[in-house]
Amino acid sequence: MSGPERRLPENFADVLAESPYAQLLGVQMQEGDDGLLFVLPYQAHNIGNDGLPALHGGVIGGFLETAALLHLLWVRESVELPRTVDFSIDYLRSGKAETLYAQCSVTKQGKRVANVLMTAWQESRDKPVAVARAHFLLSNG
Image 1: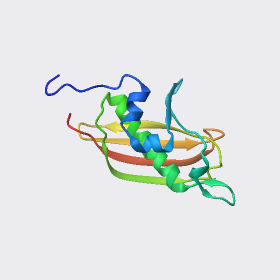
Image 2: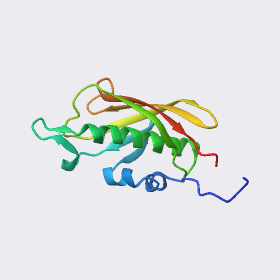
Image 3: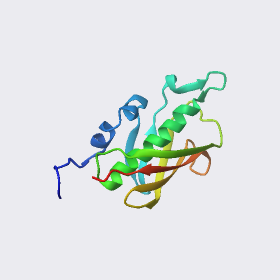
């Protein structure tokens, strides 16, 4: 490896430590049968509509973007956060006042750009709360 030595993530805590926003939201990472699973445990301050109650759309979007960034850190074994080029989200149903889950898949990764698809759900993966697509600029390191 050329250049200065870099610390590679050895566990989920190392990856989560790279994102203060993930820590603020309370994002957790797990490894499941289908790969990485991101978990956003229910917290009352994440509610945007007290009448339903429903998770704030910004929390759902922020969770999905954060999950994609953390996913890229993990699969690339990097500690340098990619930069978001664009992010598009489709809200499909209300996020209830309960735990939210997400999975990501890298659909294309080049030397400078990665494309990622994200899905968030609560009760069943077959009933997504939101889906998103994003492009990220990767570091050269």
